[in-house]
Length: 235
Length: 235
View 1: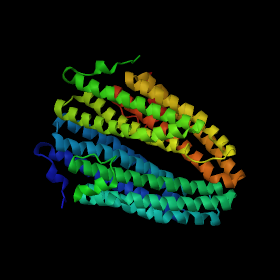
View 2 (view 1 turned 135 degrees about the vertical axis):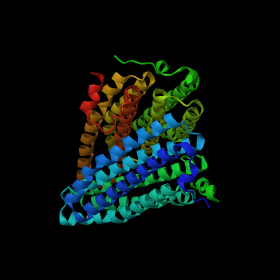
View 3 (view 1 turned 60 degrees about the vertical axis):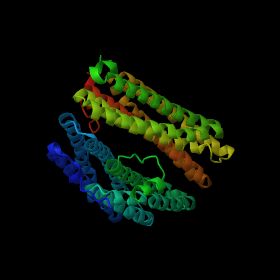
View 4 (view 1 turned 45 degrees about the horizontal axis):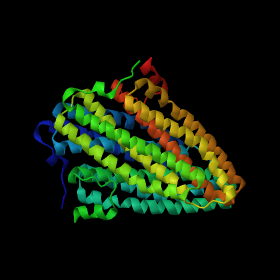
């Protein structure tokens, strides 16, 4: 039903300003997605060079956040947007905050590739792969929904967070068992636990971003409502 | 030097609107502080009734976030504020997002009081007390600096996060040792670890809030700069 181009929402005068901002958000999103994928690949391959690259690139995400934030404030001051347009700008301001934090989590994950694991302990990291794949998919779909300001998609993928939480819980139980069976491996297992936690957090942030899309299109804050209430928005 | 009343910053027309919003932020802040203190007390005393109260009250914080956010958007649309005033509103929008997440962390901590620990395992929770006290103090000082939009205070307490991170790291090492010495206690120790992590996150969020104060007063984003650069702002 609702498959709106961002362009259709915005009113004459500040079209160009807004388009530039949205373009920047997409670039930022693409970079964040690449950082996350690279971090997971670095962990998978124990690729220290790639991990270091992720750490080195984080400043670019930070720079995007600062400059987009600044641009948004300037647009508001200069263009005095009406309700709908203003809602889009507020949604962007919040989205980039979450994107920046996802960048930080990717950095944390990349650091795991720089630690030393025995070959037996390396097997532990395999456990992160499924969860990692799910989270990368969630982020990808979220950014895609953002690009099109697609309400239906946002409502649908909003629920992916539940799946990610379940995968996370299962992984956590497994890792706790490892620790109890081999207490000497606790420091290494904890490293994997922190990465799993980082992935789970990224899921939360993707869910936030879906909520901003819903807020923009519907003008409704769904942040503290039930999953059922969110689903009803497209029915 | 800079010890500014929020009132002095705001220009004629929408004084009243802004004052009402700021008042609401203070109420929200007070409630968040109470939730955190109650959560820590509930854990300390194993007080299930108080813990349940914390869980029941979280919706109030959420409601504050939604209504303040809404008010801010309406003020921007209606009053079309100039740069300084707009910066204050943007700082408020970000502050309440962090306050709301601190409320969520307090909720997580309160849940610990509802779990079962053996009397020996209860000793573990004592470890949280120092960190808890530091974080409560950080939050209190941050809200205080916010009330007065006090740049000097914000710059000074911004650094408290380092102290909290050090306390957190020390606690984490101690808890890892516990686990290695008594693997059967791992599930309980993990519960304490999650609470410690929640406290550490609250410290991060207090630091964010200090950055919004600095952003408002100085018009500078210090989020991704060094501690030295932040310190220089008051010298």
